[in-house]
Each structure stands twice: as C-alpha cells, then as structure tokens.
Image 1: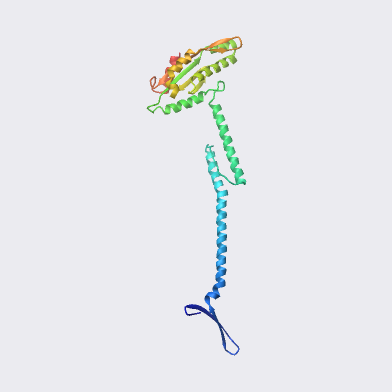
Image 2: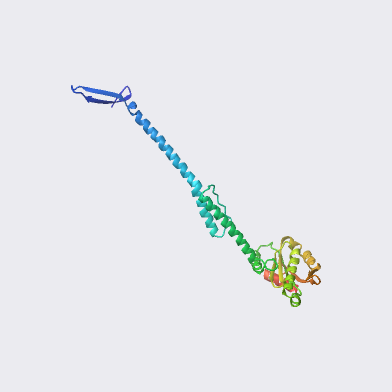
Length: 266
C-alpha cells in the first residue's frame, strides 16, 4: 500500500514464468467500497431489528407488564380492605379477562360488606340504627369532644304503655307500637341519627340544624299526639316520654349529658 498524490493505493503482484512481475494497483477506496456497502447495509438491518425489539418491548410493557403491575398493586390494596380499586387495561386478552374478574370481585365484595355493615348497625325491627352503631357513634363523638366548638344535644325516649299492650294484645301488637314510635321520632328529627337502645328505649343525638332548633323540635314532638291504630276498631294514644340535655351545658362528657337527659325524661 502506498500513497500517490494524496490518495491511497494498494498493490498486488504475481511473478510470471519468465521471472517478470505483473503488478496491479488500485485505489483503496474502490477496493473497500463493496465491503463498506455491506457493512453499512448490515448496520441498517441491525438498527431496524433493534428498533423493532425496542418497540416490541415497549408494547409488551404497556400491554402486559403494566397491567400486571397494576393488578399486583390492586390485589394488595384489596387484601388490605380497600375495595375502591381502578385497574387500567386496554388489551383484549387473558390479562383483560383477569382485570375484569378482579374488578367485579372487588365491586361485589364492597357491596356485600356494605350490606353486612348495614345489617350489623341496623335495628331489625324498626330500621333505625341499633345499639352497636350507637356505641361506635358515641365513641367517635367522645374522641372529638376536645374541640372547643363541639356542641350537641342528647334526647332519650321511652315508649309508654308497651307492657300493657304486650299483656293485652300480644307481643306482635307491642312490636307495631315500637315501630310507630320510631317513625314518629324520625319524622321530627329528620337530620339526626336515631338509635334503638333496646326494648322501648330510643336515643337521638342532635347537631347542626337540629341542634339549633332543639327546643322547637322538642316542643313539636311533645305537642303532636298521634294515635296508634291497633286494628280497624281500636286506637291507642302513642305516648312517648322524652328528655333532653345539652353538651357542654349539662355535663362535661357524654355519659353525664346522657344521664341528665335520662333523668329529665323520668
């Protein structure tokens, strides 16, 4: 290989039979041109293949790996009791089927849990909140009593004449009397939770608008005498004893406020 006029040449020679030498020379660029074209073509093919591999990896990641990752996170939340899960999946394969199944399972579980909680905190006879719900409500209320602006009123109710109705007309009539009493309480205290504490005893805890109108509502409740229709011929006056106390005026904690309301009822 030599350089002539700033151009590289490569020389090859062959000795002939008469001891003469045959020399052939050509520019290096022309000699390597075909090889360079082949290397360049191979490079383009490799770049295309690499690009396809990257696109396939991105596709698999977006269509399979990410949904599976979201499924893992969702099932972990589901196991911890969080049923408000949302899983994104845009495929139409087995991953999509699995995603739909888990979503439906979460929705069904949430529905049944809500129904179970509703049954656990609802009085079976009257439909108002039961004592278990009352105890949880009071606990939350007591935890918030440190707030300076916390105000509420407690009303205690007792259905008069329940024993007489039970003894005279039977327990089915007594149950109807209790239902009528709970309806009257709920009709007056529309914006407050009403609880059946057991037997013929009820309680309501007033806040916000019912608390602001507590005196008016109590007067309305005591003045509006209703008739309990036992059957087509018999009507009995629906008599409900009531007492009200206010926090913090009538007690430093819920227990004392309730006791005050209970004493005023009697």
